[in-house]
Amino acid sequence: MTTDPVTVHIGQAISDVYGMLQSQSFHHVPVVNGATPVGLISATDILKLVYDIEGSDDRMLRTFLDHQFTLEDAMSTELITVKQDEPLRIAVDHMSNGAVHSVLVVDDGGDLVGIVTSTDLIQQLGDLL
Image (cartoon, rainbow, N blue to C red; front, side, top):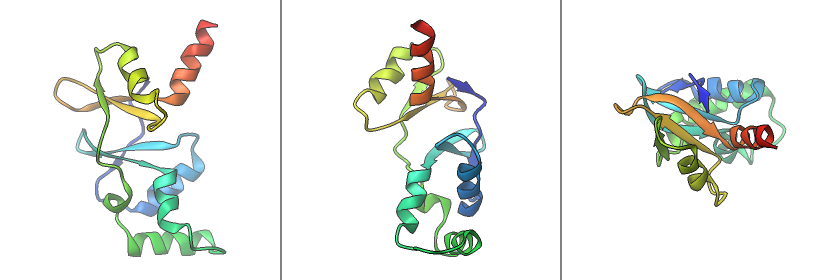
């Protein structure tokens, strides 16, 4: 699990998220309202918005994103969460069918404390071999 994951806040400009995903090594970013997860956004979610804007430069794409869409337009709101004290196997079960590649980890109050990604699971497997 990645503890203290990078997050974005509801209402943040979607171009900020786009830039973050371009410059960082992660593919999913939890969207929070305070400390409570309300969504999850991925590079794929943003690409779905702009797949037909071919040949645009980065500045034009960011401007287009911010004027046409909000973060809420692109993020997934059907969150898959596990409690921080549940076994890792629960997260594995959620991701094993391939439909999702990350599970948010929350405390008893529902606040985000981490994220488990398919990369985390591969690293754990590598440590066991």
